[in-house]
Amino acid sequence: MSQDKAATQPDSEVPKNENDSASPDNSASAAEVEAGLEAENVAEDVADVTEVGDEISDSEPADEVSLLKAQFESASAKADENMDLALRTRAEMENLRKRQARELENAHKYALDKMAAELLPVRDTLELGVAAAGEEQADLSKVVEGTELTLKMLTQALEKFNIVEVNPVGEKFDPDLHQAISMQEGTDQPANTVLTVMQKGYTLNDRLLRPAMVIIAK
Image (cartoon, rainbow, N blue to C red; front, side):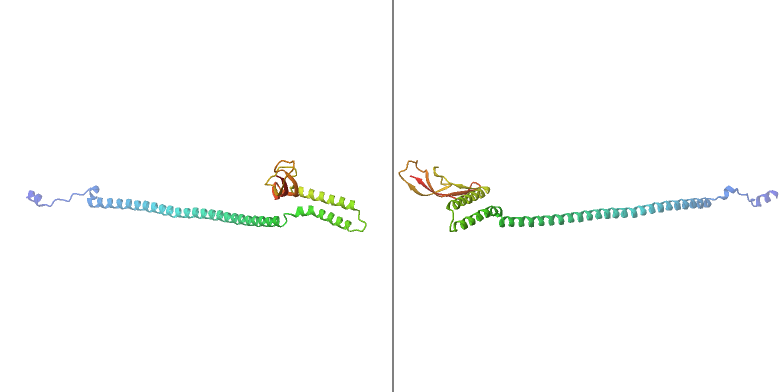
């Protein structure tokens, strides 16, 4: 009967180990918690990286804008400088053009001012000679002397401006400087020799002003 008791008596509960209390379900929960913590850490790291990237993205456009602004200001200053230089150069060129035009006009107007100044004393001497010749008791020798002096002054004035007379008596006829008005036969001079100068010629700086009117031997 004792055996039946033993057989029928329910199995006594065996106390469980504390380690055994960590059931598979509890172990899974701990793993989930740890995984959640790691996920939060990763999320924080991602957030930090994103924030740094945003700061970099925000700073780069600002630096580029500053650089572009500095380049624009430099280019604008250079353009203003070039414009100012161009305006000043244009003003100088305009002043130079006006000055040259004025000098050219004055040169045309007053090209003979020096020559005229040299001729005025000749006119004064001629007037004195005419006045002396008109006197009742005029000395003819003095009149001739005054006339010769006037002619000498005139010749010197002309020579100062390279106006040279052409007086080719006894020279060979030169059609570039002489103009024959007649020919004379029966002379002892060779043909085409200038016998007489009816009117002297003149050159200016070796350029013919007026040909000499001559008679040549035939």
